[in-house]
Length: 327
Image 1: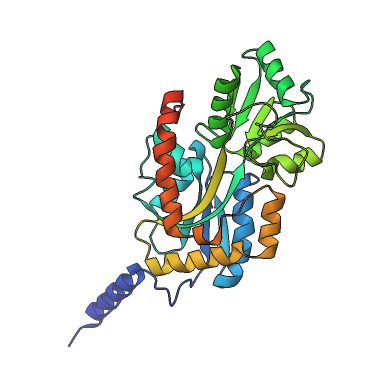
Image 2: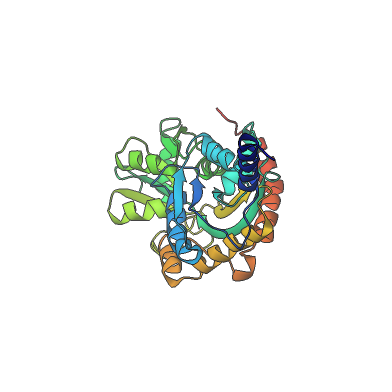
């Protein structure tokens, strides 16, 4: 007859094994889900995460908790998800730079492709070239002329080395023959705060954080980095319209889970995200922020994974040729 101590040990072992088993689609989610946003609160990625999470909470029946884990251009937060349990309770809101660019400039403890399961594309965002309110330039031509007349004196805030803001700034300098200094922050939110305060001269980031300050009259905006104007700021021309051809860059955002997350759980998260993106409220808020939704047929794990791989093939040679390196 099994003694009491042996029985308790066996029981504890059974509980431990059951706790380690991955969740199934039937009982998932049984507790809150953490979405790791790899940038500080108040930035464009954070705003997107909160909008989508609020809607997903309804369809999943559980809270979606935003956890801001900033640093090293988002690589710290993305690394936290790469090493998390593949049970669907910790996912990442990754963007073009965290899932493509960082691997070209940082020595990472994870593989941006092999260590993740794509869930869904969320949206794409242009960048806007913005300046502090007191800059003498009132359009893009005047800005470029002012930068050329003051080489190495101006400053552009970025969300970190290798961030979309940084890559855009490097390309902008190459196309315009200008030179200025970069000031790297932990995210776009802090950079915009310093732009409004007049501590830096320029930012090139998402309309999500630019447009509210533009409407408040706190900053100037010069151009958009995509082929179309932003509906929420229709007076701001595209870079091409403003005379700077070839300066086009948009940033996609998507959800990723740790490698090994069961397909049934990935599919459940995908379905919830797709339902959120179809919501009129979410679509209206995204449009107001200048975000573009992907066609329904592209909101799949396969399309997100293929887009990431194609962008790695396209952008790694460009980034390395530009000499962008971690500092």
